[in-house]
Length: 367
Image (tube, rainbow, N blue to C red; front, side, top):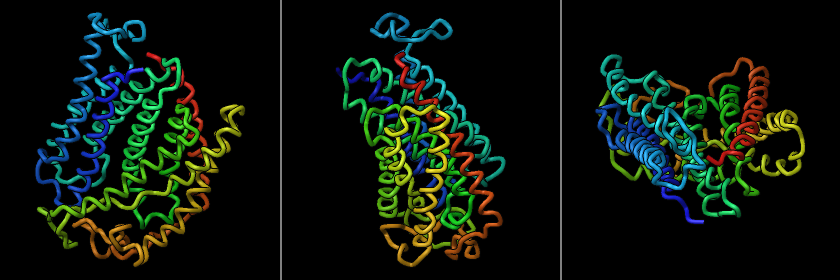
């Protein structure tokens, strides 16, 4: 089976968004927000433009009968096309709308206090839709194929890994090193990890799908730690609390590959169970495994042994005040660890169920 051209544009769009998004956060941590027209912003919007342009062309061509997808497409407002193309176009539109909104927001209110400011929330929604559209554009021909197509399966896993990166970056403020001995970090990961690992791991036919997806996330994040400090940069806003001469990468990735591996081990054994019973197992497993590996690893990240090019624990944003917990390599205090972890388990059970539900639905997607 020949790989459709729109599968490659789907991969290209999410890749641009992923690299641009990481670059943008690093830019804010290193330089500050000096202009909207930074290379990072352009890369993000380029991803949206690729998705929107390719999706719009695919819809118009299918509507006019210039493709062979008429029988495996959906109808929306008189137009016909693959479902993934419609989702990608809607996502691209949201991304483009967020650009002037974000520019106005910064002019009016200055720097963002949080990652998910209102314009960033619109952008995040658009990115999520573009990524969902990309997954559907890869998944539909994969589900229609009469026999296994290894290339499409691997492309699906790569895009799923990219979506996991985006999801983990969205909760970055909850998973800073100083927060890794608090329930808040594990509760945040419980909302993202089980959902994406079970959703995409359940769609793929690969035996170790969840592990591969988590492995992509960890490899990408670690590679950026090694790559970004190689490029010179300096702050253009103040106050500057940390001396910086190069781009500051994000922190070392969370060890979600451990619960992903546990999921892959359990998946064949639980396959015949009802969805809710599997979710009740997956939830505590996720929280228990990530807690068992991440908690002691957080101690290591706070030590001098992690302050090197490999783990990057010594990289600090220019605005990091010397008295903050992160600067002093100290953990923030926790007032109710047990209660917070119970909430994390409940959240993980709920997102596990949702992930399994979405996986079952996506396995049927052929349009």
